[in-house]
Picture 1 (cartoon, rainbow, N blue to C red):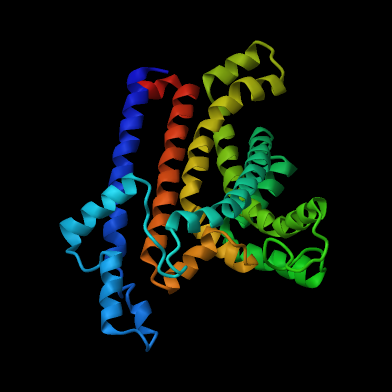
Picture 2 (cartoon, rainbow, N blue to C red; picture 1 turned 180 degrees about the vertical axis):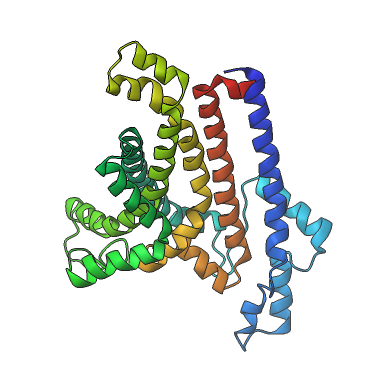
Length: 324
């Protein structure tokens, strides 16, 4: 991979992150209301206490340049401030406590969706016009059109409420009694099963549709015709020639999907009461907790930029033409 291509992509990612930090500052200052109104809900708060709180939070300074400069310096040093809702706890600690549940949930869901979605799409495209193609493509279109919360409510109603096979909410059973590692691990996977299935089903459709389209388009290329003329088997042609090129759009889609994590996290985590970034976002919105909201937005935005950077590098590795 050329060094100029790598430098260009890294510099572009850094500039994008800088613009995100600026947008992160401006966006939440434009929201209606003020975080210090939380104190007004307590009738015992005096005017002096209110002024001291505004000074401690830096709200008494001019928005630009004082608050902006302070925010840039603090963000560069990794200091995202203190939460208004969680009793002055550092935002980094609040996010750290909710990050891994979301990473586990959507990471596992993404992996399952990639495996089954790409496999179904590749086989449907390769066997275009067959029964598997019609059935698989029809199911993919239905799944693609269904939002997360609809899938989650259906799965919850059938397997948790109706059949009682899985827990209805949470990440662990509170007061379960048996505190051995094996039982807690089994309990965790039991709570994880339905949310992960919801995420995977919500993503399988679009991966399958995209992969099917890419494989069908690839089958018309000259190198596939040449491979067939050489007498290569269908499996060899699919694995060595069709799939590597058909995967290029899928790589981009997988990276872009990280941008929709927060939307999916809010709906899935609220339906299953999963203690991740989604439920944290709802809580912070209700409390006007700007530092936590800024931290969530910054974390997810940077994750998207880095994921797209990795996708560009992989894309350049798979297709040397994009490096020119």
